[in-house]
Image (cartoon, rainbow, N blue to C red):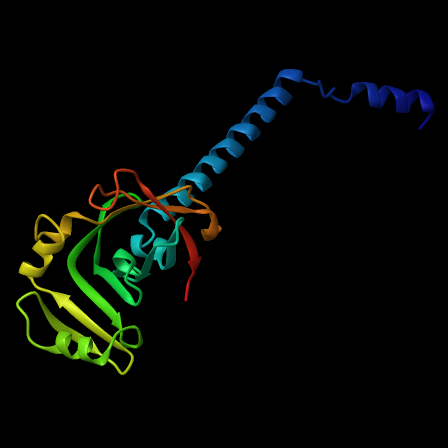
Length: 206
C-alpha cells in the first residue's frame, strides 16, 4: 500500500473531537464526590464522638487551676476532694457519686455522698478516738491504719450547707475538645462552690 493510500485510510477514520465542556463536567463530578466523602467522614467522626460512652471522655484525674480541688473519675463513679478543708491540714472534704448525662459533654453528679477523709498522722489519738464514737452528724464509712473516713448524715450535711440535697451541687462541662486530653478543659459550674466557673485540667489517667 502506498503512502498516498495510507493517508487516505487515516483520513477516512472517524475523528475524535475534544469537548472542553465534558472535561469540566468530569472535574466537577470528581470534586462533588470528594466533598461528599469528606462530609461523610467528618459526620461519622462527630457522631462517633457524640455517642462515645460519655463517662470515658473524662476518665482520669483532674485538678483545679488553683490546685485546691481534685476530681477523680473512674467509669461512672467520681470523687471531688477539697484537700486541707478550711486550712485544716490532713482533713479533706470529699463529694462522691455517679455521673448522669446532662447533654453532650455535660455531666451532673447524682447519688452524692459527703465524706470527710482524715489522715490520722495529723491529729492526736484522742481526737481520732472521739471521731470514731457514734454521732448524729456522721457515721464511720471506712477506716485504715492511716486514714479515717466519715460519712455525713443529713443533719451533718445541713451544718455544712444550707440544704441536704447534694444532687444539685456538682455540674461539669467538658470544653476545648481535643484528641490530646491534656489540652481539654473541664469546668465545675456550681454557685455552691464559687460564683465563677472553676477550671480543671487533666493530670493523668492513673
